[in-house]
Length: 155
Image 1 (cartoon, rainbow, N blue to C red):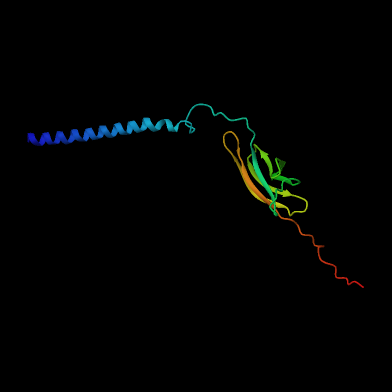
Image 2: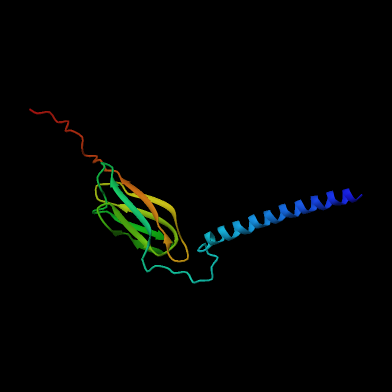
């Protein structure tokens, strides 16, 4: 009977030791991993947004021949009654919908090329800025219908 009691106490003390060791591991891992969560939105500090102005739409424009196509192109982004003329940034890029989330229809026109368009382009935002949506517009040259050779015979 005494031997049984010692065996039982010995088993309990081993279980307690394992339990304590397990608890220490958990505590150690918690202390080690807890700092990794800082900055994930769980802090009480105010969010520091930058003053950088973000455009919601960034359209890279190329001609079907492979060259840059933004020079001379006119772009418009429309959401309901709101209309925004896209701004030329360089030879390739038009931008618009600055700091304005929404769902846009985008149209690009250029003389000598077919009109390019994209519908239902959704621009979202986080706590500070819009999340830019990048589009690629390939402008296809328009072929003239009057390009047929003359059928008159020389006399």
